[in-house]
Image (tube, rainbow, N blue to C red; front, side):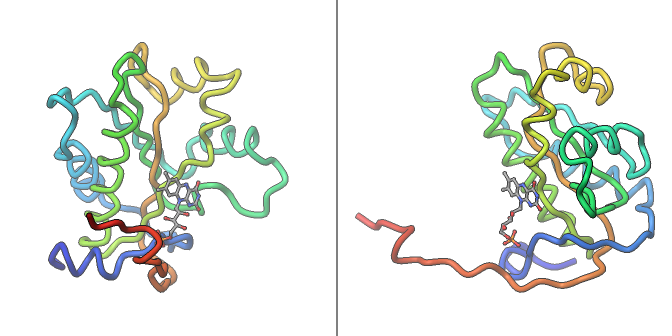
Length: 171
Ligand SMILES: Cc1cc2nc3c(=O)[nH]c(=O)nc-3n(C[C@H](O)[C@H](O)[C@H](O)COP(=O)(O)O)c2cc1C
């Protein structure tokens, strides 16, 4: 297992996966990484929905998103974890962002690849919002916040570069 700084210094978003399925214990560990994330006022309001790559809901979302795309929005990763949050709670989006990063870093520590997915937001919060909420098992009053595709990496990617001077102010 890699240490935290090593993961931060080497992780990247992965967009190509092998067909190998993830063992149940691995999936559980990934979801628990999300559940272990801090939440505002320790509300623990987030809900996690694990969807396999062949579940019909994935194809339906893809069709509503872009029926003509060559690939799919989840890069054929064996699982996608959807995080939904209580829409009446003002911190759900922040909490979901923290939880999804926990899962992303945990995946890297476990030798897996992952990519955070936001591109389905318009579809999942659009005219079929209630239908998708039901299909994805969101609790009542919950809405999609973010998702993450996870699997065994079939590629590597360099880290993104950044501009310290532009993005940082030290007073
Ligand atoms: C909120 C959020 C939404 C994202 N949505 C997508 C997405 O829908 N599809 C995708 O391929 N990558 C998505 N990404 C991944 C970013 O494109 C990626 O983090 C960025 O290009 C930097 O690359 P790196 O993670 O490899 O450093 C998303 C990342 C974040 C934080």
